[in-house]
Image (tube, rainbow, N blue to C red; front, side, top):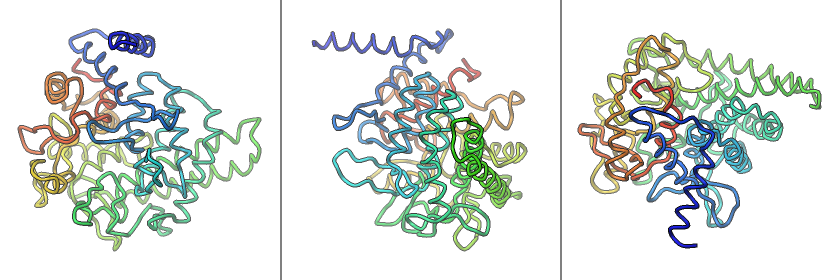
Length: 419
């Protein structure tokens, strides 16, 4: 097949893939079409497997579970590519071991590295969004054993001494040398951003996971074809009771003086008041353990201290540890990676949290024109850079094409008010 024939075949395939989507009009309708096409550029099939994978970013990122799960709502649910979403969720569920899903997925036969506390929780959250969109309850029957495996591992304890603290029901780990959240950069053998203990977004995910699990066990118990009905009812009740315990314990994160959420509870129970975007992540999940009033105050702080035209800073500029520019040697860039650098994908959680807490009473405080200009005219045409400098003029850096950011724009495109 010639090059021209290959291009034509791909165009025809994409037209079939997205034919069922509504045709948008307006100034930015062409951008919607280009976002759809770009989303497909991140989806790949490895020669060693028939299952799909998502390339997290070009030109040096590979197949990462967390990135894949964060991409699925935009790449597959917003575009109604439900069969593709099912394949991704099934593939990642099969990788679950001791309640954990590895973040880095090797294609060369190497053993997976289970160095994440949140991938399995993001898997439950994304499974919930998929089931909500599709009502594919047969798939729930297939995947429910994975849900139970994750739950049991967190309750009993698993790798890296990840466990649920019996005193408050919150998820914790206490090894300062192992970064397990998305802020996982290591320099000279040590994490740059210390988050061991009880990170706020991890326990917000844990709360949402328990809520999903309770709903699912209750649903399965009412199916005429489901065995062990009494056991499922007991599981639903236990999940619900633990969710209530966790919801109550989440109030430990409320910093009434600042009107924000503590970023983590340290292993010695000290409260980390660092202002980071993880509080926004905690507000953006399907099941939210914080009140609307608390959320509004959090978002006001995030708007004033973290929000930029290109995403959210990873650290308050007023913090002594803040680094305003992502530049220099690889080590210097790593030191800035989660210490002030702007991550563009965080606009998605900010949008979700804002809509939850304000509804239609307050317009989104976003001007996406700079980001869309970047999308169409800068760095990598028709894609978005991974990160931007924390300080103006917010020059782009990192991967030249970042999958999650494209996915988040697709996820929220039709509800954005500036179109």
